[in-house]
Length: 247
Image (cartoon, rainbow, N blue to C red):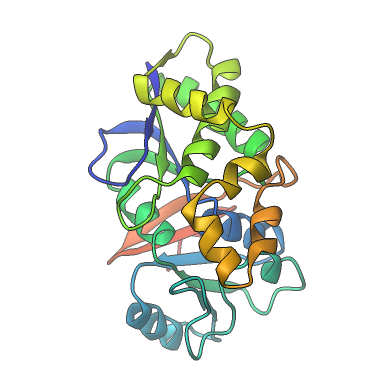
């Protein structure tokens, strides 16, 4: 058994558990939304698909997401996790982002179980992932969303933190070369804020006037919730904390 890291979505090997990371900002937002009281998140890749899905949800849905860091026209919320920390605007969030939501859907095609990881839920997510991997006696893949299919420092840093945590729980699991590389990258930075800030993603958020999101997403282990993908149907991933499986 081994712990591996994929720095870009691509076509990863099959695994028992995949932890998908888009720390700036999709997986942080999903974790915060479910921790804040939303019942489920439906993640999809395309704007039009998200709008069509919102129109079909009985009772309505909260339409959220980003393109080029900013909230798309007509959407209720953007992709800033702090927007989801208040009272829920409904039960269902439909989220579409440039990278993270696509990475989640892709990972579900290769892993037996997919969980949503961030620094916000680092401790609880690593612990639950380890329990699942041990029960399955299988591999763990930490899947970075990257940026449009390329490497990004913020996800690599976060992957390194997950490798460090998982290595404590799964001490007999082998670390792949990529996992060791992520761990080495993480070790170059003195803090999570510094690690995330070294990325192009953080610079883009700064330019968009959203650097507070970087600080928000850099907080480690402040949430206990571990979102899990329960189903994928026609490119839409159902993510929740409970057993509700109806799309």
